[in-house]
Image 1: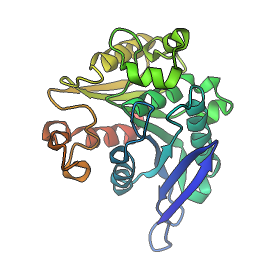
Image 2: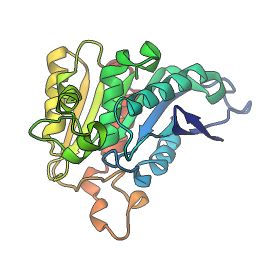
Image 3: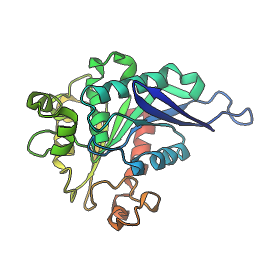
Image 4: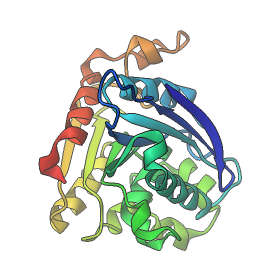
Length: 260
């Protein structure tokens, strides 16, 4: 196994990859996922980082966790860190056995906003096309700065700049260049209302961008895998069997060539 930590534009990128063997397919390459943990752009959740990377590794993906700037780092810092990380994975595909045609971004909560920024605004980054994800998995993502906003996330990202907050309301930034998306949410999320995902899905549909949308009937915000693996013993509500199916659905979606 390849395990490596490196610095990219002030962010930390942690890579989890298989080391190929001549006993199997020595030249095999793997679909790859860049993971953006949540935390309202104020901190980064460990529950949405390494456990997710290891679960993806077990499903045949290469995974990389981006520990991007928080606590005072403002836009476009995080977007440029994510674009540099995606470009790095593609440019070093041979070293990490990455399939450069199957590079995805996955984000949770505010990390979902960052993932969606990469999927919608990649053309505004220094890396351009090299940073464009082949698809984005948006987990209870902060997406809209309007009526259904998670205001803390936008304040941490944009400060008091109302115009910037409006510009980063991503349901309004979808166009023909936007990456395909897998969105999942719970109907009872009180921190990031499910309307965030519904508005984004509506915009994707209008632009003819492939997408999948799953709204599960119950579950608190911040479920991560929603399993025992990511259970906080002081927070039993983050174990939610009814939402656990999001992960196999998402991995199958990423493996499905028909959506790309």
